[in-house]
Amino acid sequence: MMADIHLPPTLMPLFAGLPRRLDLDAPTVDDAIGQLDAQWPGLRDRLCDPSGGDIRQHIHVYVDRERAGLDTPLEPRSRVQVIAAISGG
Image (tube, rainbow, N blue to C red; front, side):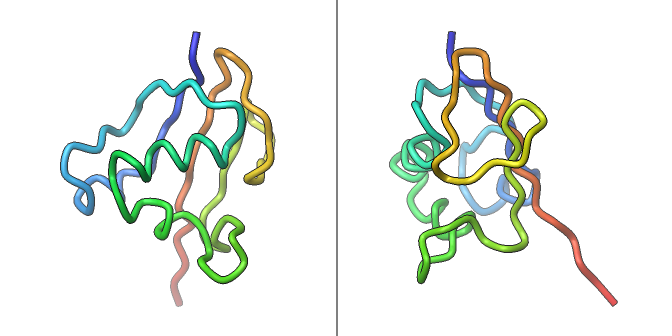
C-alpha cells in the first residue's frame, strides 16, 4: 500500500493533469515531492523554498495529522495533506 497524497486545489490550474489526490510509494515527504516534481516539473518550487530547501512558510504539510517536514518518514497508508495557507489583510 502506498501513501495517500492530498494536494491543495490551487496547484491544479498550474500543472496540467495534476490530480488533487494520488498514491505514491516514497520513504519521506521529500521523496514524495521529488516524485511529483519529476512528473510535473516546477512543483517542488511551489512547495519548497529554493534557498533553504525547506517547505515554504505558507505551505503546511501533515502526515497522519502531525505537522511534517521534508525528512518526515512515510509509512504505507500514511495520509499526507499539503495545505496552502491563505493570508490577507
